[in-house]
Image (cartoon, rainbow, N blue to C red; front, top):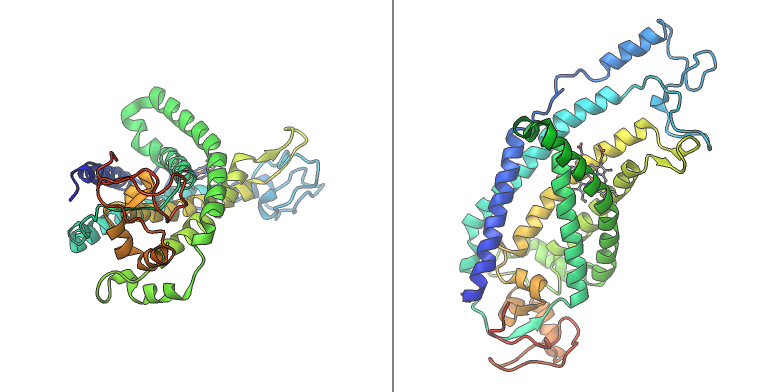
Length: 379
Ligand code: HEM
């Protein structure tokens, strides 16, 4: 094993363990307050009392002098949303779901996934099956691709961590921090989340546009799926630039879950559009739905991201180097993306630099010869 590869690998392993420990402790304390509240019952009673036993008169009924927006999604233009809504059904139901099953299931998922990955790693020991470095490198990602990836990854990390504080902080952090410190952390986290959200959307859109052409499904992907990426049969299944697993992550993670998080996040970020007082906006009902879907989306997106991080580091040694520095070893390319590697060879673009020699002209396209990397260059 390359001595200079040991440090990043150990750092990745340590990071994964820290994340697993954090998520584990989160799950262990996920019984957030109010989980014994009875859905809808309390507010139903209050509403009936306010209506003095008569059934709800319906939206905007002149006789009631009130509006109960709980079955309505749209606001007349120019009306401040729920300006004169006194009581709303659904708030208690939302709170019970959020603090109960949603918080619990998210925590369970975030605890089980790292555990599953650890078991998968111990059972397969990918580090023992990594081919020895050839000493020749192939350019995989150019500077733009890496910049877009890291912008998305870092903004995601900021959103996930601040989201965790919002979701579990009151139960996990408040008891030992006290109100003074926790209120600062919660407030700062909320502002970071509000501001980074739109930046994450921007980088996700750029990410989608940048990597779309490599993520179109082709017939070779079926062979990869049938062989479960190489778990069935001898050696890794042949794959092109990205394999079917990576394409699934791109479409269901980056694209679908990215869209769910973006739309629901923007609804939460902007309940009112325009001047308060004359604004068009969403009802509490819409906010509650958006919030529930946001939380559900976060549960799956964070879990899938843990899998993605594992596959890019411990699960496939040599992969992280491509996203960190832009190049991968030729032996890695041949083993994990054979069709891409063969294509490079056919085009005469694969890096075949003997040790110690610089390879290729500066500015070569990804997948071609790398401009400045040579074996032994600092990583
Ligand atoms: C994709 C990564 C994201 C993750 C993992 C994530 C995660 C979370 C989590 C866990 C919560 C807390 C829910 C709760 O306490 O019940 C939350 C709340 C929130 N998120 Fe996100 N989020 C992401 C993206 C976004 C985006 C893109 C936006 C906006 C454009 C956004 C806006 C919000 C807002 C405004 C809230 C606060 C809701 C409130 O005040 O209760 N999030 N997010």
